[in-house]
Amino acid sequence: MTVKISARDVRMDFPARGSQERVSVLRGFDLDVREGEFLSVLGPSGCGKSTFLSILAGLTARTGGRIRIGGKELAGINQNQGVVFQGYALFPWRTVLDNIAVGLEIRGVGREERRRTAQEYLERVGLQGFGHSFPHELSGGMKQRVAIARSLAYQPDVLLMDEPFAALDAQTREILQTELLRIWEQDRKTIVFITHSLDEAIYLSDRVAVMTQRPGRIKDIIDVSLARPRSNEIRNSAEFVALRQRAWEVLKDEVQFGVQPAPARSTTPAPVRALQGVV
Ligand SMILES: Nc1ncnc2c1ncn2[C@@H]1O[C@H](COP(=O)(O)OP(=O)(O)O)[C@@H](O)[C@H]1O
Ligand SMILES: [Mg+2]
Figure (tube, rainbow, N blue to C red):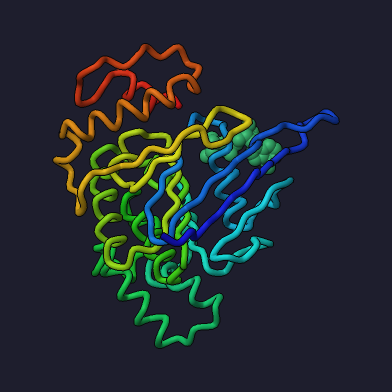
């Protein structure tokens, strides 16, 4: 087993607005992500999930600690990573194909190859026929597919995803989760996937790392032993429900919204639904 990303004692403090003090967002954050694994980071709102991802992407400079990606100390923006955010971040004046090709353009890939690669990834995310559409003509789910295609077309070593499906309706979200798994299974690039949904974390991942509340650190890591390839029905299996229950046991003390304890047996425990809505 090769370690792809190693974070040791990572610390992040932000200056607090209107005061001399600093807000401690990450403290003592340790995590190893294995080569080729799908790892989710689950945690309550405000615990520092996005901050950690932004540090991994090289967009935010950490206050302390060590991070190695592919054996190299992380310093500045890492060109070998693709990042997918919740808000799509598509260019409204560019067509779908030109949005997908943007990373390749920045890399200096020639026009013909850009077109070919963009077309290939357009098809991979099931958007054939929409290459010449503009973002405003697409639904939220389709825009998120474009954002995923754009990150994949760049052929990153590591894919960093920050709650990419959080803004989508439940059904679209489930469809895209399954599609993401199907795409990932083709080449098994390392994925770090941030979410606050227990269900999503377990369905997608090889392992789920659960964070504490702020200052965030990894509290526990849950091995998800569910067989692959996975499809939606697996969510109703006893094994899935037991894993979700375990993750909830780790997470619930970190969630301070007076959510009731999870019932012992239910396919969709009320507190899980509450957590998905609230946190
Ligand atoms: N650039 C920043 N400046 C100051 N505070 C920040 C900045 N970015 C994030 N924070 C603070 O760090 C905390 C964690 O934020 P974030 O990483 O976005 O949490 P999460 O993604 O887990 O919800 C929040 O309290 C947020 O206000
Ligand atoms: Mg966030």
